[in-house]
Amino acid sequence: MAPKRRAAAAAAKAGGKKAKEEPDRAEPKDAFTSAKEALLAAGPQARGKRKVDEHSHGATSGAGEVHEDYDCMLNQTNVGDNNNKFYVIQVIQNKNVYYSWTRWGRVGEVGQSKPKTFNKPEDAVKDFEKKFKDKTKNNWSDRVNFVSHPGKYTLIEVDGEQDAEVKVDSVDGKNVVKNVLPCALDGATQDLIQLIFSNDMFKEAMECMNLDTKKMPLGKLSKLQIAKGFEVLQELETAMTKKSGKATLQELSSKFFTTVPHNFGRTRPPTIDSKDIVETKKEMLMVLADIELAQTLKSETEKAQEEMIETVPHPLDQDYSSLKCNLTLLDKDVETFKIIETYLKVTSGDYRQPKIVNVWEVDRETEGLRFSENDNLDNRHLLWHGTNIAVVAAILKSGLRIMPHSGGRVGCGIYFASENSKSAGYVRTSKNTGVMFLSEVALGKEHTITKDNSSLKKAPAGFDSVVARGSVEPGTINTPF
Image (cartoon, rainbow, N blue to C red):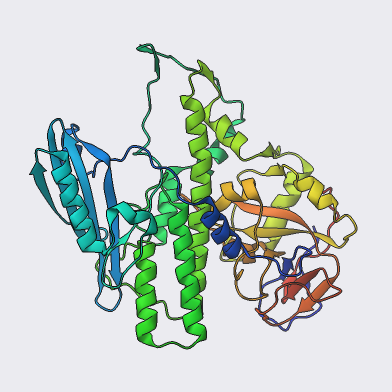
C-alpha cells in the first residue's frame, strides 16, 4: 500500500476524505424519521404474564403473582425542581390474599414501599385504580388513550412477558427432552454472534447513555415508548426554532426524561437547551431502537427453541440465521486480510491504534442486487464506517441508514471515511472489542467541499456524492476487491 499523500485541497481541518453517499432520491428520509414511523406503525405489542415487582414480598417469597393485568410503572421528571422519580403499582395475589403494592422513590434507588392487604380481588383492584388516577389523572380502563399531564406521572410502556427463563415443555404431563444440535458456525463467528447479541453488552450501552434499565428492561423495550421519545425531541426542536424561553425548554426536557427514563442519580436532570444535545438524544434513541430490533430477533430464536419439537438448531445458529446475511470468515494468511491489516495501520492515528482480531466478508440478502443497479457509477473506494457495538446486529439485518444529522458536518447521508482514525472516533466497544465496517463505496462524480455544510440533503445536481476533503488521505493501491 502506498504511503499517505497530501490531498488536493487542504483547507478543512477534517481528517482525511470523508464521503457522504446519497441514494438517488429527491428527499431521502433520515433514520430518525424512518425509525419513528416504523415504531409508530408497529403499535403496542401484546403483553404476556407480568412479573411481580422484585422488591415486593411476593417476589422474595416466590409465592405471589400479578393479578390479571394490574401492573404499571410510572415515571415523572421535573428539571426545574430536580425531580426524577418512579412509582410502581401492582395487585399481587398470594393464594387467597390480595395486595395492592406500591413502591416509589428516585430513579436508580430502591425507594419506599407499602403493601395493603385485601381479602377480595375487587377491593385490591379498586385501590389500584384509585392510586393510578391520583398519580396520573388518567383512568386505568382508558389507559390506551393515556394523556400526560404536567406535575403528574406518565405511564411507561413495556412489552413482552416477565423475565425470560429456561422453560420445560411437556406433552400430556411428560417432559420433552430437546436435542440441541451442535453449532455449525466456526469459533470466531460464534464469538461475534455472542458479542452482538449479548444482553450484558446491550445493558452496558444503555447505562452508558444514562438510561434506566429498570424501567426499560432488555426484552421489554417498547416500540411505542421509543416513538414517543422521538416526538418529544421534535417538540424541542420546534421550540428552539421559535426561540422559546427557558421555562418551555425545561418543561419539554422534563417531558422527554419522563417519557424515556434516565438514571441521573442525585444529580439534577439537565435542560435540553441546544441543538447539539437534541442530536445526541436522537442518536441515543436510534441506538435504543436498534437494541429493540436485536432483542426482537433474539426473542424469535427463543420462541423457536420453545416449539414442541425434539431437535432444535443451536441458539447461535438461529441468531445468525435471523440476520439474513452470510458472514464469511477470512483466513489471516490470505492477501485480502493482509491488505486490510495494512490499510488499518496506515490510516490509524497515533492516539487510536486498533488491532484486527478477525475479518468477515458480509453478503446481505438482496444487497448485491441493489448494488449492481449502480454498476454505472465508477470511482469506487474502500472506506471505513465506525459505529456502536450495540447497533451492529441491526446494521447486519437492515443495512446502513441515513442518520438524522450524521455528525452535522456534511448534512444528511451515510458517512464513510478514508482515514480509520476518523471512523474510529465513532466506535463504541464492549470489553475493549468493537466492530467497524470497511465498505466498497461507489462515489461516482464527487462534489468536494473544504468546510462544513450541514444543510445538504443530497449531492448537488450532477454529482453522486459529497466529499469533505481534509489534509491527508491514503495513496492509491491495487487491491483484489
